Length: 392
Ligand SMILES: *Cc1c(COP(=O)(O)O)cnc(C)c1O
Image (tube, rainbow, N blue to C red; front, side, top):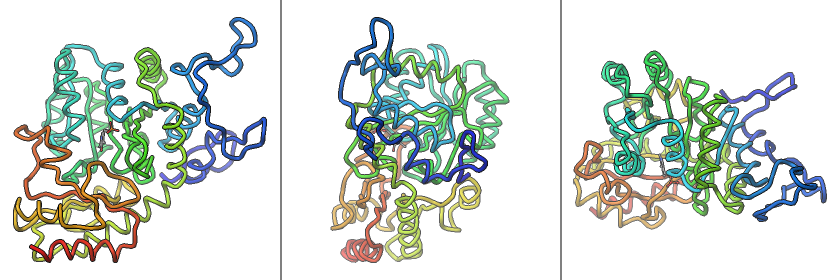
């Protein structure tokens, strides 16, 4: 799982070697070790019809974007990767590329709120239905996928913000037995911790805004897959719709990805320390972290993830008022949407990231806080949370 094949070589290169070198060949003109950032929107051919390296126009292709796509494909162990202007733009390309009106998406009932909004309120209006359910209820998943119109199974693990873990391999088998495709939103884990294609998934999507970019300074999304025919459909969406990532965004994402491995190790160890420290704390009703033995998905996560990641959710014993007070009471944990950056963030999903799913089947508890644990010194992070909880 830590290694991806390297063409022509006896042994496979490791994850971080790919992260740093794949798509990053030394520049042929100046020898620049960091490949130049290409802003040009158009490319001069060697005479009519003779494109120099296949590039003609910036929406169709850009060398900086290609470098990112090669890097992303290598990290997920896929044959093809496509980079988009946001995670939701990437998801939209998958749905429009691979589904048709009259078809239906079967999805987890605690999927990212923005994904559900896209699927229900944009694609819903264009005739694509959805069925949210508990993805650990495999009988129900199989029953839904047995219907001909259900052609895509949409999975997020660990899920946002309830940290539910589901079995990618088992769900891939169920989907394929019914002729459906399995998509995994791998944003929370990142390819360093989990590689869904190797577990049988057909399509991986990312919000690269989160761990891949890693520094809270660039919005982006990606689709990674191995099947050539499916890839052609995504490529056509990217080209014909044009929701591509710009050159600077692609460059920043590539730069962030080079340190993904070391960041994820630190995110994971900090999150584990916080989860252990606050499990059993008098102000905390429950700590939701797959790294804890008490988490119902712990053993499964241990089989399909390298480590347990940087996201921790807390349910406060004092209910909604306590959650609101802690959310606004920390100093280092910054109250903000998003996740996956080097700095720790605090989120109150009920009214922030998941406000759009209030009152639906995907609503989240009112006493829930979601922490994106950064890579600061963990003693400082624990002290910060202790102080905010002490004020209750
Ligand atoms: C943020 C996020 C998205 C959406 O990505 P954007 O880059 O914000 O468009 C999708 N899935 C998950 C799990 C996310 O956290």
